[in-house]
Length: 398
Ligand code: MG
Image (tube, rainbow, N blue to C red):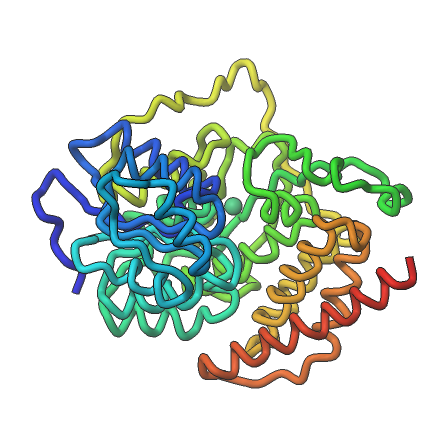
């Protein structure tokens, strides 16, 4: 059962990943609507200075950080001020996810680290606002089954999935046919494949329309972000990958569209800003005021759509293959991508090596059908180690 909010007007939040891009936007919404939302729990990995500021402003009852050293650092920063309970590590994140006084948990941690807290929050019957797409990519079958068992609604915070969720409201399930998943196309949409070998880290970090964290910005440049979103959509909406069409839409105004049996299509639009998707999940089934404003349609003039170029961005094919073959393969794709992106951010490998790594590791993997959580974690660990050893070979060569 989803716990009732303390009053009609107030919802208590646990924000996991509060120092990241989604987390800080979420806190902006809380700051704008103190009568609607309050913060019970915050977690961050490393940025304890920002976390300390957030604690002073939002006064959560509990916080969790990466490890004991970070917990000590945070405790020192807060000196004699009124301190929340300070926890750390996976056990700390899980405790924050299950915090008794929180009604809703925003899962905005980056990468595979978000999985255990997500399962814990669902287990505790919390209402879920899900921004961590890796959770559904790695273990979507388990996560969705547990949510169903616990009667927990998962509200998507990814802008595309929030759009799809909004477009589906008020329609009958059997009338639904297709998802048009839009992609900005990233910074290399119109760059010639011949020059992909020269792409630098700075080029890849320069996203044309969305302002996001480093990992997801690289994922947008490779289009792996869209690949992960394909897997995420299959899980969230209980559809097949054949029902998804990816469309490159550089203006990022149409956040995604849903097609019905009669050929009708409903699109959800807005300016490219994560605030709306976060606020929608927080206030669901209602809405709250934001100062984002509407798109200036007359100034934008044209909304354009094109098919993605999978020769330039094979990541989309990896994702469709992962959807086709399922089992542990999506988790392996995700893990190989995380390690490859981290190596690219550390300038240990080149842009095109990211694709080579993922393809190699997916090819080498011995897939398991219907894995338990332990099987998924094992495949994830194997993929990380295999990717890392391939990277060491490349960086030695360079
Ligand atoms: Mg997205």
